[in-house]
Amino acid sequence: NQAPVITIDGPSGAGKGTVSQIVAEKLGWHLLDSGALYRLLALAVSHHGMSTDDVETLQVLAEHLDIQFTHNDEGKIDIVLEGEVVTQAIRTEEVGNSASKLAAIPEVREGLLLRQRAFAQPPGLVADGRDMGTVVFPQASVKVFLTASAEERAERRRLQLEQKGAEVDMQELVKTIKERDERDANRSVAPLVPATGALVIDSTELTIDQVVEEIISEARKAG
Ligand code: C5P
Image (cartoon, rainbow, N blue to C red; front, top):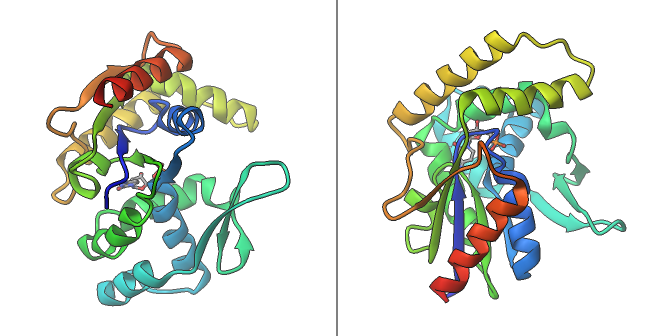
């Protein structure tokens, strides 16, 4: 597969989702939100009342799950699982937590691997996740590791939660984020580490536009 790929990996809250979307739009390239695939699988497992102990069945489900990303009338992307629009439903904390547990199962990662690679189509792909540059697209022309301090990521999360009307304990939030960083960086399958040669961008003090510009200019250099 010859389509060029830009990988954008990093912890949650670093701004990957927004940045990846804008970079893809500016370049006119496809976008892969790989976290959504893990979330979709988690939702399907819950819908079907499946056990997560049978890893072979999970792998088959990961390989064959009926998932579609379609453009709606407003020009936005609808995420469709087995015929049902679940764009919002996959964004809950509960689904995120189940997704992260499933993501630690090697058979699940294996089951999603080829599906993710199939997104690399001309004119190019921006792939957002944790292991895009290390495992899924090791040949990517540009690899980015986007991070931000735990405090800044907690602050961004606080804003999101408060918009939804939730009460937030900042100290608790920072602590949870640090624990998750530790776990993600040290898990045995596809740990969250910068790919070799990755451009590491710390977004703590940067605007979204500045991060986007840096990535686009790196992409131009790579041709
Ligand atoms: O990025 P997002 O929060 O949507 O991802 C949900 C979960 O899926 C993450 O917490 C992570 O555990 C897992 N994930 C992963 N590898 C990816 C993308 C997501 O392990 N490439």
